[in-house]
Image (cartoon, rainbow, N blue to C red; front, side, top):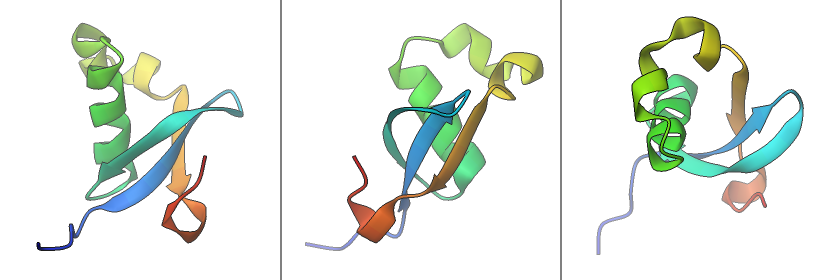
Length: 63
């Protein structure tokens, strides 16, 4: 099995941890998180997306 090259990111909104998502970069991970959270229509709204931040997950297993 091939190991994924995507990095695990911890997703935050206003400093509160919401979950984790894999992506090529932080923006990709946030977009995938929003789609998974059923905010698909809002994933193109830059003001809404700017509320979210992502950091690389600690030891690739951040909870």
